[in-house]
Image 1 (tube, rainbow, N blue to C red):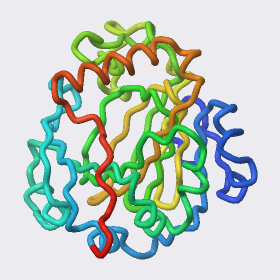
Image 2 (image 1 turned 90 degrees about the vertical axis):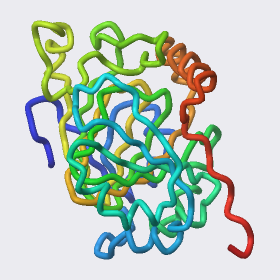
Image 3 (image 1 turned 45 degrees about the vertical axis):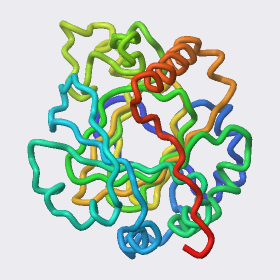
Image 4 (image 1 turned 30 degrees about the vertical axis):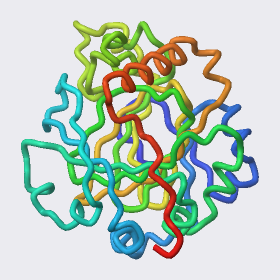
Amino acid sequence: MNQLTTGMPVPRISFNEFVAMGVEAIFRADVPVIITDLPLDTSNSANDLIAQRLGDDNVTLFREASNKENTERWQTTKIQLRGFLENEEYQRDNSTWYRVVSNIMHRPEDINTLLGFDAFSLLASRRGLNAANLWISYHGVFTQSHFDELENFNIALQGRKRFILYPPGRRDYYPRSILKGFGDKSQAFDFNNIDPQRFPRLAAKSPQRRDFILEPGEMLYLPLGWWHQAESLDDLNINVNFWLWDLKILRRPYVLYSALYTAAYRKFKGIYNYQPEPAKKEGI
């Protein structure tokens, strides 16, 4: 296992065991799980296949200061994916973190080709598919602690990511201002560096922490409402994640309220909110 620190281990099951259990059983268990031995070929560069199939597509570039304690919202702009992959400036700039994301849920054929299995039939055939996001980042890019209002399957195609997870809750995590659209984020930006004087309730939850590295060919199931952060460890890191709605959000009203307010806030402010890209046109 890839446990890094004290805390609770994350259960691991094989891809075949996952298929036999089914998505609904995983959702009902409501605990993080790492699914291993996915039938995707990690010996070849996912970068090349992505450039071939999606290189001419426009994606959303996230730009933010390379500071784990950064309090500002990321900036976004549209960019051609090939330009991001071929421009070394994004890798050399030590003062800024760059990552790209594209919600390609309307491109199931491309996604299944990238993953090497019929992910849509397995993960997204049920109700409530919200997004199928392609994420690409370089070494060191850090996603601050937060929770999602959606069930999450995160698949590592290339590169490793370190995840730190904590179970659902609100008060113990010192959430930021919901009125400013940060209700899903903690004032403790980095769960690997928690100040026990400022955040004693969170520090007391350390025995419930999960800390691990997601390797290429593995998939993380992360239930909605679980707090988490992620750090890219390799020169190039490529992931695909599926977000799905589930009625368990009704059991976590603070998650539901945050989701509704944040969606309205981002729409009002014109902030990027993972809208699906258009389907690929015939003949292209």
